[in-house]
Image (cartoon, rainbow over all chains, first blue to last red; front, side):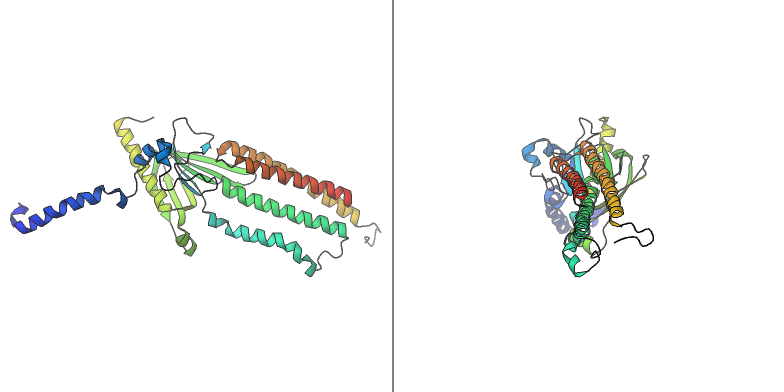
Amino acid sequence: MGDIFVGEKHKEEEKAKEPNMTHEVKDPEKFHTKVEEDIKKAEKPITREHIPGHTHNPLSAYDYFPDNIDFETREREEKIVLFLRRHPITNLKWILVTVLLLIAPFFLGAFPLLDFLPGNFRFIAVLGWYLGTMAYILENFLSWYFNVYIVTDERIIDIDFNNLIYKEVSDANIDRIQDVTYKMGGVARTFFNYGDVEIQTASEVPNFEFAAVPQPDRVAKVLQDLRIEEEQEKLEGRVR
Amino acid sequence: MTIPIIGVSVFPIIKIFVVFALGLYIAFALVVVRQVQLMTDTLEVGFEGPLRFLAIMHLLFAIAVLIFALIIL
């Protein structure tokens, strides 16, 4: 009915536009790569190398389809899609403090704090200072290194290593995810492109927070794609 | 340096405290080694060797400082 009121010239213009529009939709460069396609790519080592975000660096904070990472509770067919930890720039504070702690004994001569002690006691005090500094480095580095978030094609896993004597591992199935929110605020976070991804689930652990992870928008997109994929699997009866 | 009322030297007391503190530190260093071992079993990322080495070096350094303190204090 509406076509009666559309002029022939206008129709031709619309027809001329159509191929471009379909071209835009199919152009993979303009959209994020679908996780499903990436899973297929990741199966072959040669194509896996070309997936954006894939790296072999064990100290990386963002690894898409990592190939040298494994965790205790992984099932045989479970594929790791994302491996995340806090952005390296979040370590800057304790690294600066460490530098100050390391050079502090050299300035001890300027402040006669330990002058009442004999030389041997002062020497042990300096060694004790460096032991404390080493503990501080280990505590901070291990907290960063082992505090990881893993997204597999089946679930999300949060490994918390809060301090040297406390750890917590929690997970939730992808199909239990209800809501994903990501937050980026502040100068450093905007500049270095990192932020928090909050995931609300219907599982025993209601909230997961991927704190200060790089590229939170891509993480949220991957989680969304995995949820769609999981829904499709359920509809098609391909549930593991 | 002596404690005025008792007339006992302060340094043997400081030495006992230092040795006790270093003993506690060694216990902490042992916990670190064990925790790193457990965590590297939980999560394999490909950096387990250097991490274990770091934790063991930390423990050895703590033991060395304790022995050194016992000798020179």
